[in-house]
Image (tube, rainbow, N blue to C red):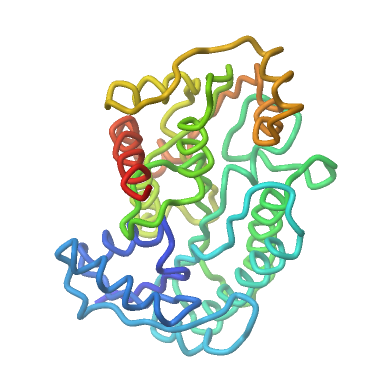
Length: 327
């Protein structure tokens, strides 16, 4: 039985991925930062009719060495999915240090234990931070830019660090990265993910809809992309931009409206959004995206993995129902 290590096992994408792994008869070793999350994961799996006899747990911290080498013993595949997600201009070390050091600890443990393949959950944030408006698997965020947020820097430095370690390692471990755009869809645990909070919760509060577009993809498809990359020998050395489509916010608002959600569908001119942003801090980040059109080319996912995601529209509706149930 193939053994797969998954870091950050209680995470939004990770839990969906663990379910897929167990359904495919892999043995899963999952890490959590806090011990109580072990029972949370077990309960989630049982609620989804998943046999929990093929999963074991380790309490690990991205900032400490203890336990990583032992946890990865005998693991053929390593999915490093743990990394903090905090939006906005927060203190740099809250994100960059655990992202980079956690990746380094996990990858070094994988190399030490001679794992076959290392799959990093990176992000579109490691791709789009440059002056382009057309993005592919080969594009990188420019760390010399002064307007980058700590999250963008953390994901970029973490992935760059992974490729550097892999390149210089005497043991030639296979590696690839998964770089999803904005991930939407309900969580397995019921805990609302940061991506859903940032977009869907914000739309529910807005009295109008700004004219901005966002690339989106469903969480189940992102989980599946991890497995496809893990199992496909041709994914070695590749980055995978994962996206279903790019939509205007009004598209998402109309989905919510059609599912009996009380949400505005009034699109306002850009100058009104900019005016309101002086008084509403949450609109300031939105103004940066006004009239910004992005064209994505996820060629590796299509040509190497045969990855063609399902429509995320239904997942959006399920996410909002989950958000509303928490109020």
